[in-house]
Length: 87
Image 1 (cartoon, rainbow, N blue to C red):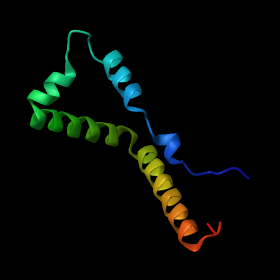
Image 2: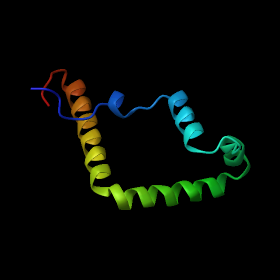
Image 3: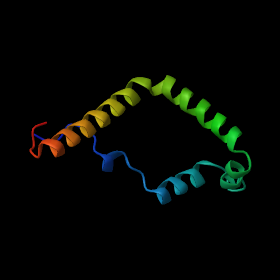
């Protein structure tokens, strides 16, 4: 049976890929890196509001993904500690 949990490689997004995504998502004339550097508190508030909105609209799926990720991580640590594939 296949692994039903998410692994870090399933969730991990390379830094370059994230930059490309944000560059495509935002207008070209918007220099988001400069804005985040110049206004870090405001950027944090915007990110928090966006995260809250995303959580409200996709909360169940987000929670399920995070729970699967955490369970997989705990399983790996237990297996590593015990030195055997137990979980």
